[in-house]
Image (tube, rainbow, N blue to C red):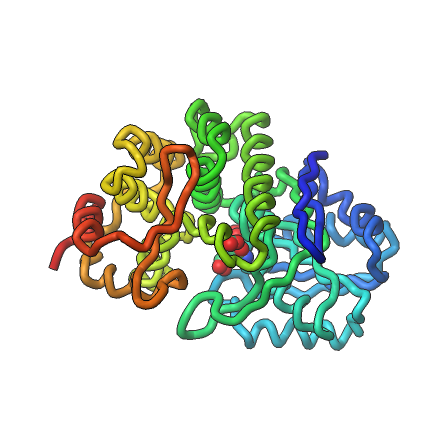
Length: 367
Ligand code: NAD
Ligand code: GLY
C-alpha cells in the first residue's frame, strides 16, 4: 500500500492506494475515530460492480450500513437529487459520528462530499474514487458541490474527506473513453509541476487504455498525480493563489464544454484542447519553447485525446464564453500557462490578438 498525506491545518488525511483496497474499506475505516453507522452513496453502474464488495467489507468490520444510489450522470448532480440523499440520511438516522462514503466517479464524490458537509452541519466523509479522473483529482482536496441550472458546480463547499481509498483494480471496468479523459489530468500534472511524471508518460509506448499501461506506470501515474494534488492543496486549501494552477487547460476547456452544452466532450477531452491552447499562448509569450508545446501535444495524441477544437466553434463565441470563467478578475480572462522550469503561472496579460491567433491555429473559425 502506498500512502500520501494531505497536510492541512485542521483536517489532515491520508490517500491510500492499493490493489484490492476495496476489500479493506471496512478495516481502513475502523482505524479512524468514527461511529458505527455508514451511508454508502453510489450510482447503479458502479454499485453493480463494486457495491457488494464494499458492503461486505464494511459489515465484516462491524459497521451498520445504509445505501443510497443516485442515477448515473452529470445531469443528476442537482439539489433535487441531493435532497434525496438527505432523505435517506434521515430515514437511517445518520448521526454526527456517522460516515458518508462516496463510491464512484467525480459526480458521486462531489455530491456525497456536499451532503457530508451539510448534513447535521458536517459528518465524516470518505472518498472511494472509481474513475481515473476522480482518483487523481476530484477525490482529493475537498471541493464538493452540485450544479445550478445556470452553471456547473455553482453550489458547494470546501469539505475535506477523512480518508481517500484508491483501489486501482476498479479501473478495469471503466469505459476506455473515461480512462482517456482522466489521462488529460495526469498529463496536466506532468506539465505544471512534475517533470519526472512527464518523462515517464513520454517513455510509455501508449497512454490510451488501461490494458496497454504497465502496472509500474499505472502505479507511477497514481502516486505522482495524487502527490502533486496533495502538495498543492496542502499549501493552498481554499485556492487563495497556488491552487489555481490546477486549472491548467480549464479556461478554454470550460468554454468548449459550455458552448457544446456539456454533451459533445468529456471534461478531460475539453481540458486536453485547453492545454494545447495554453501551451501555444505560453510559446507566444516566450514562457515555453515550440519544442515544449510539441512534446505536450504528442502526449495528448498518445492518449488519443483531441488537440484541435471542433470547426463549428467560432472565435467570437469562444471569447464571450471565456469571460464567464471563474478565474476572470475585473473583466480580464486569466490563463494558467506553463513555464520553462516545469511549473506554471497565472497570467492575465494575454491579449485578444494572441488569443485569436491561437484559437485559429487550433481550429476555431473566425467570424
Ligand atoms: P462520473 O462521475 O460521471 O463518472 C463517469 C462515468 O463512469 C459514469 O457513467 C460512472 O457511472 C462510470 N464509472 C465510474 N467508475 C466506474 C468504474 N470503475 N467502472 C465502470 N464505470 C464507472 O465522471 P468523472 O469524470 O469521474 O467526474 C466528473 C465530475 O467530477 C464532474 O461533475 C466534475 O465537476 C467533478 N470534478 C470535481 C473535482 C473536484 O476537485 N472536486 C475535480 C474534477 C472534476
Ligand atoms: N480540480 C481543481 C481543484 O481541485 O482545485
